[in-house]
Length: 150
Image (tube, rainbow, N blue to C red):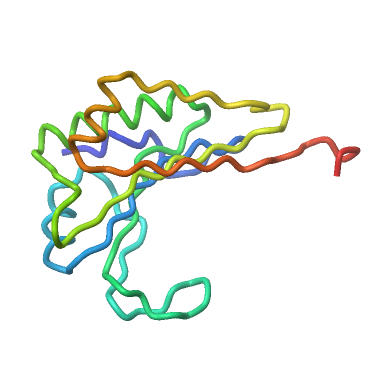
């Protein structure tokens, strides 16, 4: 099956509109989930491997997959909806005893390309996110493209 959730594996120039799925758990649970996901895995790590930040050993095995890396928030929300629908069709459940997942949503704001960002999820979207057992994490990163403001 073709990878349908993220429109491009290349980051578009300009604003950040990024949705990532981060999952931690046992190797067996990750293998099972990875086989069912219709996403390319960006990175996978084993329990005990050092983290990139400080070299501390990781407490759990895990993976990160890009759901969306788009030019604007509207396209990102559409890609998230496709991922949620695919997850429901596959019967995925992200809050299992041996698995923990998080849907991370990041945007950049403050420059001429994307001064502000608005994400609009419907009640049905939010209900499905909850039914799938996915906590949400939102991040906004300030950017400036006016050299007089730095």
